[in-house]
Structure formats: structure tokens, C-alpha cells
Length: 246
Picture 1 (tube, rainbow, N blue to C red):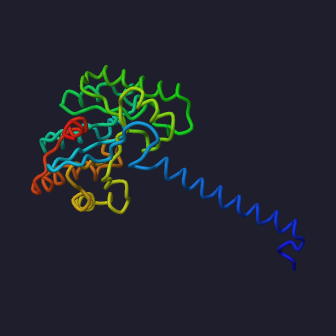
Picture 2 (picture 1 turned 90 degrees about the vertical axis):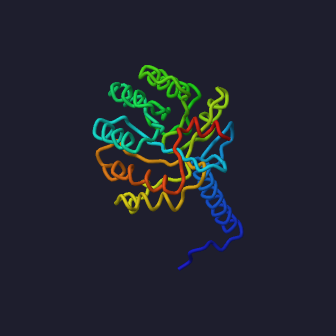
Picture 3 (picture 1 turned 60 degrees about the horizontal axis):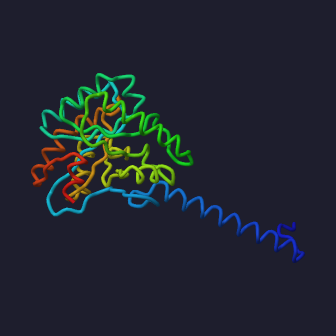
């Protein structure tokens, strides 16, 4: 049974099609790497960690605020006596404005995590502006008066988002440690603590998700994690404070 054409023209066509398929696959793979890159973007500043000699670390919590776990998370941070940066979505802030106010009143930093939490890739400049500015306004309404840093939903960015941030003198904030992003790590308090201890460095930005009902383990890990890091000589700052010690 003949599976490959015998005529030169037909063979050339098949080879060309195969090459095109490989190029497209490689391009798609490269694009995915670019969209998800934690250390590179086309425009403006991006910070995933600050290179400093001092043992400082920024704890960050993404998504929400959600009534299921925000109060417990705030209680844990209060017990530990550390500040954190909360990257909140505008939609959830509209639904639960009291939680945004409570986070700000507790002395934590409020960051912008977009309004809808949709991936901000292949979107218009107008969409980016609306997502960010609408959420900025809600953060101010919650009573937060500090610098509003921005973290893209799912860490994804390409052209329009970094360009908007650069034009408005803002950075893309990423992370270099993310213990509860791995199911096998997030399954236990000890897993979250040990993963963080293994990967943290001076100037690290730690990504956590602690406000949803399903994130009980993350909330329970806050106090022991802080105790372990303190034992190693770390002190805790907000993302804005970390950026200021460059």
C-alpha cells in the first residue's frame, strides 16, 4: 500500500506541508512560553523577584476576596504579625466590598488582578484599560491609599497589557515561588511550607491562593510558614516595599 506520493511534485507538496506544520507548532509553543514567561515581556518592567542582599520576602495572595476564606486568612496573618499583598479582582470586590475594606484596614496592600480575571492575551487596548482602571477605582473605594501594583490573571500577558502598564509607569508583578500551584504540594501544610523553604531566596515574591473554600491547607500553612522563614532570618514586606529596596 502506497503511503507516500511517488511524483516529485506531490512529494514536494507533502514535505512543504510537514515543514509548515512543524513551524506552526514551534511558533505556537514559543508563543505559549512567551505568554507565560515569568521573567520577560516585550514592553515595560516586569518583576518576579528583587535581587537584594537582605532576607526580605513578599507574601502575595491571588483572587477573591471570597467570604469562604478571607476572614480566616486575615486572622492567620494577624496571628503571624506580617503584611501581605492581596491581588484582588474587581468583580469580587464589587460583590464583597466589605472584605476589601477589611483587608485594607488590616494594613495589607491591595493589588490589581484585573476586573474579570479573564486572560489578557489577544485583547484590545481598550479592554485592558477598562479591566485595570475599573478595578483601581474599586480598590480605592475599599479605602486603600497605597501604590496599586498589578498582576495579570494566570500570569499571562503579551502585547496590549504590558504596553498599557508601561505607558502608565507601572510594572507587571509576577512571582518566583508558588507552592500551592502544585496539587501534590498543596495537599498538606508541610508540603507548602517545605516547598517554600526550599525555593525562597532574598527578595522572593511568593504566590499563594488562600481565600477560596478549597484552600484550607494554604490558610493553615500561613503561621508555620512565617515561623519557619523568620527562623531563617527573613522579614516580611509588601510588594511595593520590596520594589523600593532595589
